[in-house]
Length: 102
Image (cartoon, rainbow, N blue to C red):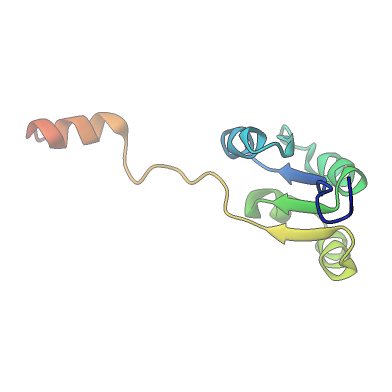
């Protein structure tokens, strides 16, 4: 395998739902429990050439730690959108579709 066809190791750190999508694409994923974000981020940095992080995880890291990682360039760190809560409850959506008002 030559350099142009060699896979680049990728990692994702964020919520479990978004991690599932990245995992389907062959990316190594880390979905840390609350309080484990820094350790998961450190593992991802050690394991990959490119690390994707959600804003929620980035907010749990020390600002200086995140700035160093972003500035280092190796591994490349990118903040990507993560799970967003639904605009309204599913039950509300069903009531709307059925024309039932509360």
